[in-house]
Image (cartoon, rainbow, N blue to C red; front, side, top):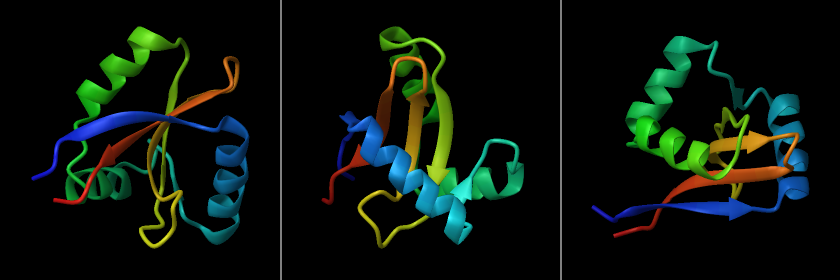
Length: 94
């Protein structure tokens, strides 16, 4: 299995992608517990590691999932409106 890495993406492009995800019903918030857990498990996300890494870099990060596997913006993100930053969990293909 490929080694995951955390990548910073363009905050403003992310905001547009998140808006599209909301419009299409593809945004998953932490409050949607069953849907959230299923997505995280299916995509092998190490949430604790990601959160710890992100918290070491930026304050006030919020997690969100864009459930669009066929889109370049599909994935698990942590973002901060105050710092205008977005991080994503990436696993390169084997």
